[in-house]
Amino acid sequence: MEYEHAISGLLHKRDEIAKRIDALRVEGARLTNDMRAIERALHAFGVQGIPQPPRAYQYTFERHELRRFILAHFRQHGTATTRAITESIFAAKGLDPDDRKHRKDVQSTITRALIHMADRGLVERTGSPRGYVWRLVG
Image (cartoon, rainbow, N blue to C red; front, top):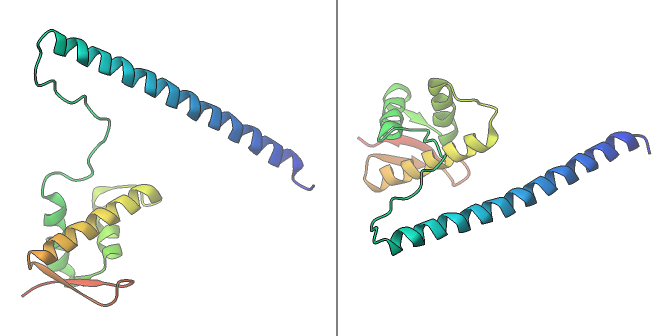
């Protein structure tokens, strides 16, 4: 086999990563059990309304920022596809255009926002499901 050494190394690294993922799952389950035990103890002491633990998630947009950006984009360009809006948002916010997962998440969020805005009569779409073009109403 021509790339036997490279393939062997990649398979070895893949096995290491799989073992680490399993170890992290076990650790996560243990920590979840510990947190639930602490919450049960707090309830036993009569504590009510325990707040949710903080999340590591960082929001891409501030409240109403996406809607304002979409409306400004339409005022400047007239019509746009979801992809065009996504690209201009990535450029304006300085986001990494090569981060495919983040790009997909943002594009999905933009699509949901546009559908919501269409339901409220602010924008409308034309075209087919594989190529919607959006524009402001009025």
